[in-house]
Picture 1 (tube, rainbow, N blue to C red):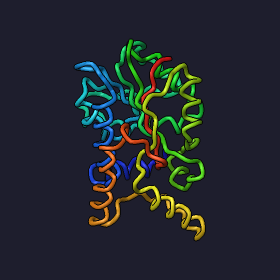
Picture 2: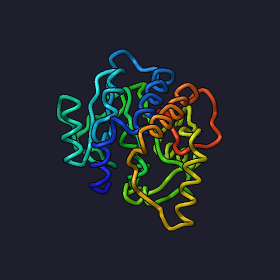
Picture 3: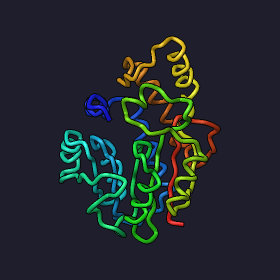
Picture 4: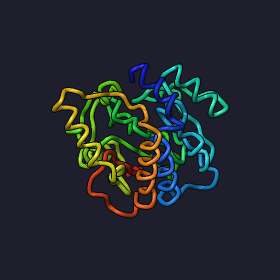
Length: 242
């Protein structure tokens, strides 16, 4: 990702509506659908500044990987121990057969060989382990945001399922989320294209709007994994060895 993306992440990951509500949604989803053992061994790959690590720490002992040095330093400070730097798709030096859950949250879309990356993650799973995957949805929503984040693609349900299965995994509880605000986001993307103002700035809006968006998005914590959403900005699932 561009350096400025990591800098904005570090600045806003504790206040931006998207980060805050998404952590609560993911926490509830893992609680309901993860079926993790007590003191699960968890690895987050592509942890960025480490803003998900405290949330994942609710479920067990967390390790993490981040290839950007500055973001890795912040994540290491948050985790309280060093974060690794093994790159996808190979994950050199990462112990195979160890983890009860591998979390890749808006990471797979960055990897040219997504199937190879998922296959390496599969090999890192302990018996009964699973991968928690979140990716951006809908190629037609491609924007400057995807460019500065160095995305290779956005996914449909069909393309994500195909990649998961090609890696020797099977999807479970796959569905859209960030759905309630989808019409607003889609309208903004379309308007940006029509006006030539396709803006990659993802700083939080004014405080009252930020608070409103957070409340609206957080409602989905009660829906994701329970109610099939017809469309959304992202796709979320677990993937298990086939």
